[in-house]
Image 1 (cartoon, rainbow, N blue to C red):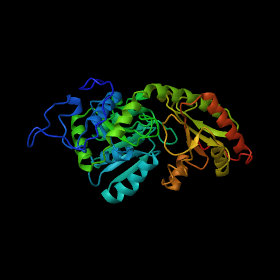
Image 2 (image 1 turned 180 degrees about the vertical axis):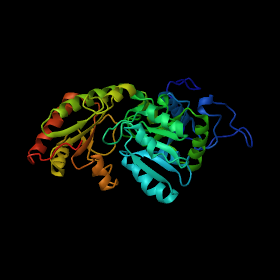
Image 3 (image 1 turned 90 degrees about the vertical axis):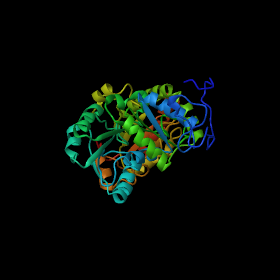
Image 4 (image 1 turned 120 degrees about the vertical axis):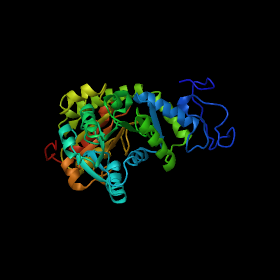
Length: 391
């Protein structure tokens, strides 16, 4: 992407306000249309953020993109499209932070209702729609943390039939492996904190759309709510986006190797990875995406004691929340990212104490396999591995 100055790297502009050509006018030097029609105040627009939003729109195959200070603030902007009392159909296995926001903020504060359903079957999604009240379908594909897939094109057809918005959280696949807008989604969301930035040093969120009307509404919400990223975060995220393809290829190759190894290990009860033929939606994964991502979910045999031993024994995989960075991370969703999900629902979804979510990084694959093997040996020494696969 070129810049008005010809610099190959868009500049970091830290200014919070911009001189205007006259009272009620924009500044004198016009920017390219994609950067905006001029700048007044940094909450409303900033050249570095404009460059970042342009890059995101291009990556997602969209006409418009908007940057936010976090993934949750991007989700918040979407709910502000709906209004008081709206009904939303949401995938049951959704990011814990999104579920917490929906249940404990949107519900009591905005009188919004949510139906959490298994979106593996588009008919289930359609059955959950309340005509006249349902305003949005929210899905993740793959879902967090059990990696269930949604047939985005089929659900998009359902959404259009009933006149509701379809928003797809594309965080796990990134725009490199999946293009929800091309499959019929109205809006696509990414947590920039994860793969799009990829280096564990930026918190952010983005939305992309092909709809001028939605862009205008979301742009108003972005400015009026004010949850915008700093220019420096946008600058770093643009740097990360430049290597997205390289990183995603390595993430996927490593994750496939890890999933294959874990699937054969006697200490493992079950593995779910979209690139394994054992995944119940493997055919859809091959049809809908160009790669299978870097996330692997594994259920250990035993219980919490074995999980603690395994996680405590890892050396290359850091025990940490978040995902999608060059470093490999491991977590126990039931006690960490999804602790706010009601226990009964966690149990129904298979998010129990034996589930470990692996964000497979870009390290050497052999080193990762050795680390996992020795940690599994430590876990195996804690019991005879009672229990069966929860899947």
